[in-house]
Length: 246
Image (tube, rainbow, N blue to C red; front, side, top):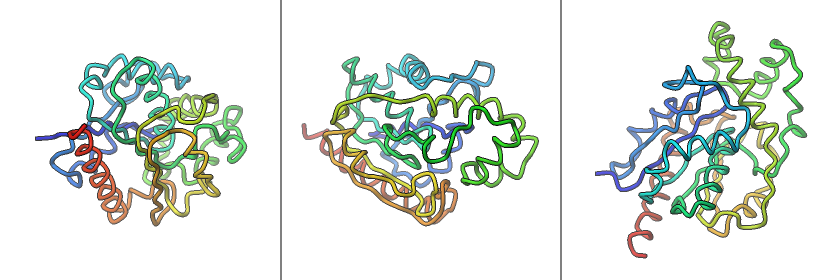
């Protein structure tokens, strides 16, 4: 029987169901639950959000009964990391139990303006937009090689990038109180030169950082995915036990 719920949040242009290949690598004590964003998956008919706070509020309203139970964690990759951060702040403000752990993957700290690193996407035409993604390996390889699928998800990508570019949270040190884990591919151009100390300002809890062989989507490699899930299992087991003894 699962003790801990791991809510997973997708990257730009992705679906949370894309993390289901994590499931067989997670301990039986961990229940993996996708948090699907509007405009994709089962919510494909809903309009996409272009504002992270509104997106996070939407997830809060749809899943607040699940969050109220406690003993849960978040895993977010890239855009998903920002949404996990925003959602955690909303939960805290509303007096909900803190997550026991947040796994922030493939993203620098929320206070970092990524436009200064990768440039702005908003004014690019479709070809320039996709080429920019390709240059940073910010789309899964299978998607980059499928022009029809890229055309289909382009409006979703544009909304998602708009969310990321316009999110500039203001917060004092220790806005969160849970433990956080920072995860990234060693060759990920989007997190090169990452300042871990900026992540430390996000929580009064413990922080650890891990790097993996690969680029932005390091966990698409089976070996790296296994290493990632081993870390997730270990962290959740430790923090779940601590929660039981409180």
